[in-house]
Length: 99
Image (cartoon, rainbow, N blue to C red; front, side, top):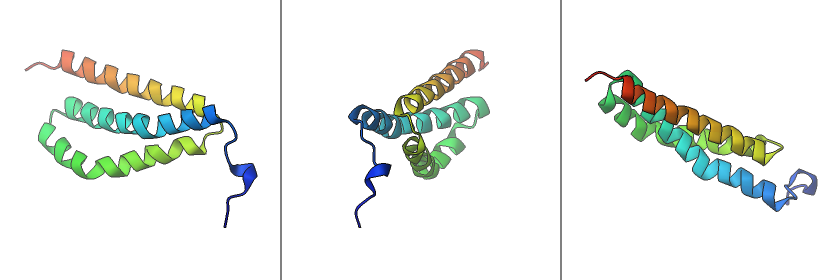
């Protein structure tokens, strides 16, 4: 059964923004989240073992979310902001850590 045309994305740029936010953006959020947890908890081994199992679950969750947005550019901006925030937390966690 074909999809109803009123629910399909008509703009190619919106589709591009959603797919860009979903695939590479979702993966970068997943990796940055796990790296942030590893830096801030100090337990790298446990986080890496957990990462092997939760990578797919977290990535699929953040992969589906952009397609629920009406505006793909807002989602791409949100994902970019989340990636930058997590990256700053990783950098700050490494610089504050005393070892």
